[in-house]
Each structure stands twice: as structure tokens, then as C-alpha cells.
Image (cartoon, rainbow, N blue to C red; front, side):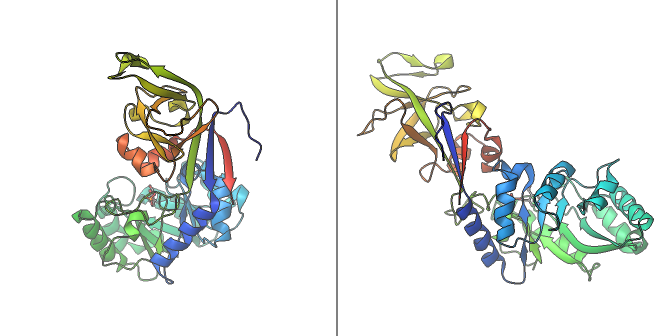
Length: 365
Ligand SMILES: Cc1ncc(COP(=O)(O)O)c(C=O)c1O
């Protein structure tokens, strides 16, 4: 790969690690459970095309995206593998779903009626995924809708209901009672759809001991290296690493401050480096005065505010100090996406989806 000096940060996406994560999740799910790939939001910011192609090579049989636009992008990459739109059946573009062989996830009785009308008009038994809301109160058929469907099966008689699904709200918190509660509610609904296969479980859901056997899990973040078991060490491989260049080093004197707002004042003379990455690259401003970068695995705490293009770090403790042009580690095994999320009071999902397109991107096979 050609190094481009106009770029001050370098994002590496390890597609081998992504494939290994897919296999690990498949092992965890068991041979009788399909592992779908959730590739919405440009595959959590990592790039839909390289991610989808890697998962397709692993024989991932089903993909999920959030919007019709994302599904159409997916169809440019692969013509046949099932792709479903979590956002549902968008108005005015219903026929595109059929034309492009895209599945809407049916979230409401209204979605269902429009999808069935389309199926009848086109004289097909359209493959259908029904999404039941079991406690998240976000998207999906409500408890009342579920009762309506149970008592009026004619509402979907012209459709081929292949899957029913639900989504956990709190699977990342091992003790949260809602997970078991949702699984139980989903099981009750499932009993009324004996011919449909069942999908329950995002990344964390797959690692929770719920008394429900799903036919398909839908991991996203774990594929991309996020920890699905925050209470334990991360079983997933690191997929993303990000390095940024030192643009300048300097000695700040005792009593000096650094950066906007003078939010850090030096208690002693300190060697600092100014690094070419900032919130415009997705390194969130809430990392100001928190966490650290690393230079050759040596800790370099962040000092002062993160600005649009720059972060200032303390390099005083480095035995071997970085100089202008050297690369420091921003995201690495020393400072994972989960570490950064914790420091900046967010989640690894936001860390990944915030990564901008200014960094030089390298996809490593
Ligand atoms: C319905 C649904 N299923 C699965 C996922 C994937 O979740 P995760 O990235 O936590 O594995 C999402 C993500 O938001 C989702 O909305």
C-alpha cells in the first residue's frame, strides 16, 4: 500500500480477523443455528463492500441492513444472498423490494398489509420476516399486534412467513432480568408460528444463557471486534487499528497550559507530542484529558482537549521518544474500541461508526 503523506492517520481493517470472528460466532451458535451478518451503517463504519465480501466468503447466508438504500448497495455487491431491511417497508418504494429481491422486516400491521397487497398483486407468496417487539419499545409488532395476528391469520395468509424475530434491549448486561423476560415472551409468540424459524440474539445475546433455542442470531459489533461480554475479557479478535502521525513535539513548562480551554495545566516540565487526529476523524472530543495513545506500546496519556484535527499527548514516560513523522497507536490492542468507549462515556458502536473517511484506509487480508 502506498503511504500518502497528506494523510496523518492510518486505519487498518483486518479482514482475516473479521472472518475469524464470524467463525467463532458460528461455533458459539452451534451447527443448527445460522449466523447472519448485520452490516448496517456501512458495516458499522468499516466499509460495506469489503466486509460483505469477507462474510460472503465465509458463507454467511443472511444479511441485515437498516435502510432500503443500504440494501440496494448490498445488491450491487451480491445479487442473491438474502438481505433484510430492519427499518421495515418504506412508503412509496415498496415495489423496489420485490424487484431487487430485498426483504422488509415487518414491524407493524400497516407494513404487513402493504406487503401482503403487493404479494397478491404480483401473485407471489413473498418471503416474510415478522419482527415482534418483546420489550424494547422501539420497532416491531406490539403485543396487541401479536394478539391480532394470532387471532386473524388471514392477515398474512398470502405471505410465506419464513422467520419471526425479536431484539434484546439489555443483553450486554448479564444480570438484567429483561433478557430472560423477552426470551420468554418471544417463545410464547413462537408457539403460534410453528412453521416459521426463529431469530433472537444480537452479539451479546449469543453469549447469554437464555432458555431459548434460536435458528438464527444476528451479530453486528462482535464481528467487528467489540466485546459482547463486557463483564469478561473479549473473546473476539481485534479488527480495527488506527495510527496517527506525530506532527510536532515540544517541552511544556511547569505552569503552562495546553490546548483549547487551557483544560490541563502542567505541574512540571513535560515533553508532549501533537498528533494528527481529531474529532473530525471520529476520535471523540469526550476523550479530552482521558485515556492514552501508545508509542511502541509505551503509554502516552492524552492531555488537554481533543480538537478537530489534533490530540496532544504526554510522551515524557517514553524511553524512546517519538519524533515528528512517527506513528503513534490510537486504536490498538493496548487501547481497544471498548477502552476508548469507556473513557469517552460511549459504546464501541459509536467509536466505530464515528470513524471518518479522512484516514488512509487499508484492508488487510
Ligand atoms: C434488530 C437488530 N438485530 C441485531 C443487531 C446487531 O446488534 P449488535 O451489534 O449488538 O450485535 C441490531 C443492532 O442494532 C439490531 O437492531
